Image 1 (cartoon, rainbow, N blue to C red):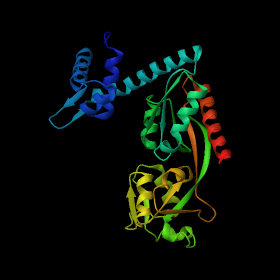
Image 2 (spheres, helix red, strand yellow; image 1 turned 180 degrees about the horizontal axis):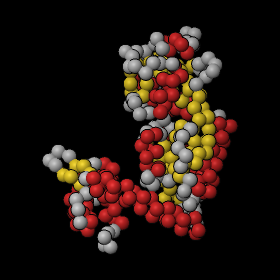
Image 3 (cartoon, rainbow, N blue to C red; image 1 turned 90 degrees about the horizontal axis):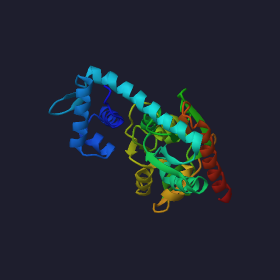
Image 4 (cartoon, helix red, strand yellow; image 1 turned 30 degrees about the vertical axis):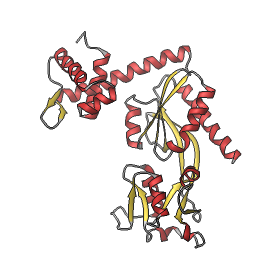
Length: 301
């Protein structure tokens, strides 16, 4: 085992995570053949198979399962050693791997990159968009430095910093603009357009509208807020979107925006990171910089 390389461990971790040679190879930016060779060499060094290969799928052996968890711990420790070194020299430099949920990324990411580049010119922001569940896994396993998600994250190992709070607004076809705004209870009986399962914004909308957990024929799903708004413009139904999305999403759709009666639905957006990260103090400052960008924008509006 003395000759095992970090490269082999990273390749194996990608393979364990994806369960597919093609996707793991793409993630590691190498050829599938090169990945296979490296993992085979790792298995020879270990002295036992880590993967069970069949014609249709690849899965971890029992040893591979245990090995994968230890490898993740090692890789996270190595990454944190790198962060410790950065913190002692110049903390705001190098890669900053930032995850964002899809209902925030298109509307806030350009300003985040521009603002952080101006304040921390040596910081290389590497964004990644994914649903909350995926971001939390990547963050806890060390593949991200921080993530912007809906709070609370409810994970004791993560620190949280509130960035901003915002209301949800009702999007209706333009022809309904003069109609009274429906009460919350009335939304249950309307054709409501929601994001696909896996999006936290979907869960928040369902909770606010008091929709039963069982599927309803009045619910129609879309893959993005843009899709939902365009469907509203086509008079298929109504939807809720966060305030941050309004300027971008209503530009090319025949829709109207209305605020729901109190208590209005809201969400809290914040940045989270591992408490064990040696750059935790720097994360606080980055969160403060993003919060200031958002406040300045609100005041300008």
